[in-house]
Structures are given as C-alpha cells and as structure tokens.
Length: 113
Image 1 (cartoon, rainbow, N blue to C red):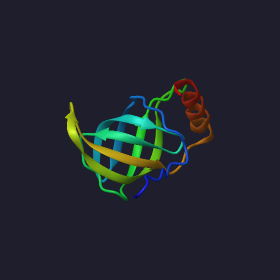
Image 2 (cartoon, rainbow, N blue to C red):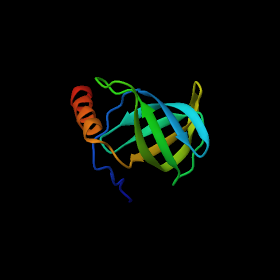
Image 3 (cartoon, rainbow, N blue to C red):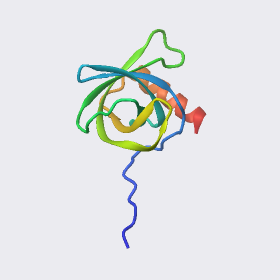
Image 4 (cartoon, one colour):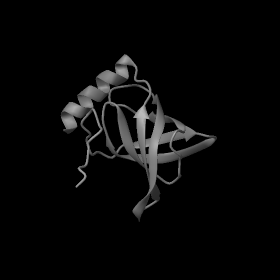
C-alpha cells in the first residue's frame, strides 16, 4: 500500500490573509488557506497554471506600505465546493523573501502556530 509522503520542508499555518496577485496580464484578489516560510496555498477566483510566475502583494504587520513577494505556482486545482468567490486552490513557492520579509514571516509563524 502506498504511503503519503510529506514533501514540505516548512510547517504551514492555517490563517486567512487577503492578498493581491499579478501574473500573466491578470490582477486578482486571493486569500491564503495556509502559508509557511517557503510558500502558501491560495484560494483564488482565477485559474493559474503550474509553472506560472506570480507577484503576491500583501500588507505585512509592522511594515509601511505593501510588500511584493515573487512566487511560482507549483500546482493548481478546482475546489470541490466553491468558497464564495473562490473556485481554485493554488500551491505557490516563494522565489525570494527580503531580510525584512523573512523576519516578519518568522514572527508571524511563531505567533500563529
């Protein structure tokens, strides 16, 4: 019998964060289902293909203005049942976090876990 292999390197925290996404000439609002130091699962109204690049725009606690995190979609799928405006689930990996973003993410993950 096959066993499920956990491929994540970082623990994820279930917490809804509203984010904006930009990629492939589309701009849309999404929400995190869960996130970690290395990536997130987004609930999205827009289907985005694996391999697609995204800019994730969000307001991080304690930071002025908005932060932009470059990311890559690793997988996407249709939700079993729609959650309001959201029809798709996207797994994304962050391509780069600045030192400030890393520090804020570490603090958020400690508090939320």
